[in-house]
Length: 59
Image 1 (tube, rainbow, N blue to C red):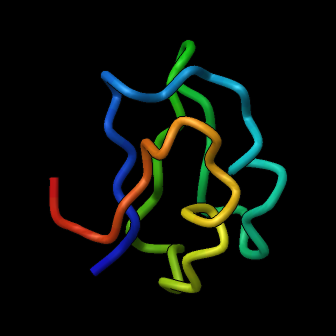
Image 2: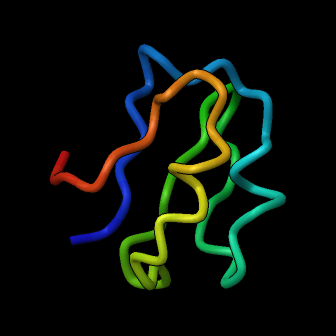
Image 3: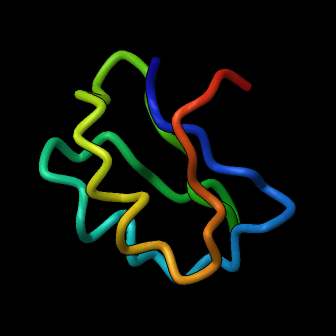
């Protein structure tokens, strides 16, 4: 199950975008979005998100 960004919690800081080793996260406007096809479920984004907006669950 790929990482999921809660758009209501995401602050748009882009920390997860910079941390993702496979470039599976991009910004859409002010919110980070995970590409489920690219996500390797490494959870690096979860560890660095200061807003705790990312989890391993389905949308």
